[in-house]
Image (tube, rainbow, N blue to C red; front, side):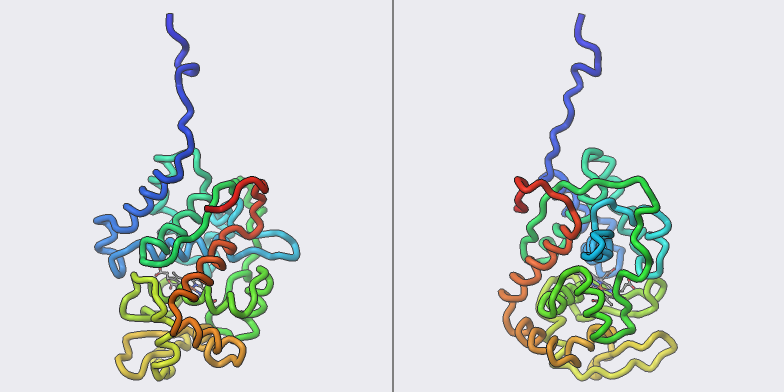
Length: 283
Ligand code: CCH
């Protein structure tokens, strides 16, 4: 007689290429056609960023490892409003590849989304483990407040271990996606092609005339020529601050440099606080 079913069952070997493919298909799926600008890419980038951006270098807490945003204490904070949509979108892929951790899946989805939307390759490696302990959620207040200025941006990003140049490079992700009234309170896209990763955000910051929008919502800026675009106070901070602005100018005119610097910084962001074995280089 043959072996018992547990003996014949061969454990599926983790194949991250298959997961990448499934994520890429989701981003451009038919379902995405009716969503926002026709792509799930931008919200997946935001999920990867918010799950990682809670990192605190001094205490070693927060960051993508653990996928604690599954729990109400982190999922429910104002800064993460709307990211339940991104988590739910990835659930069928988690079911299809149950061996991947949520924390690897969310960060990989952000990396794949950048590439699918025309951005640079983002080096990524697996190794994050989920924790099933809600008390491990980082405290609220670790993510940036869009209503604030340069000192706040520095407080938040220096805490993660980034410098001024990396703050500007990472902010270039606002070439993608839009603000939603019912999520952050702000409204609108940063540029006219929000599903293409580009230097457009930096060019518009420098070339458009930005005026405070007259409306009943939180303070945001609008472009004087079409009044269809927006900038957050934290976006404007990049051209108001003498040390940030030269990097905005650099990236506005040098796409290769922006792609290179963004790729390095975003890859590092996704790895903050993750205890990888030394023998596992990101590819
Ligand atoms: Fe961001 N971002 N972000 N952001 N963000 C918002 C949306 C996106 C701030 C505030 C907001 C980064 C940095 C900052 C994306 C990527 C990155 C929204 C609208 C606010 C508010 C949310 C809504 O209403 O749906 C602030 C403040 C900072 C300070 O630095 C960084 C860094 C990244 C990635 C590297 C992406 C992508 C979106 C679009 C999401 C979507 O659903 O379209």
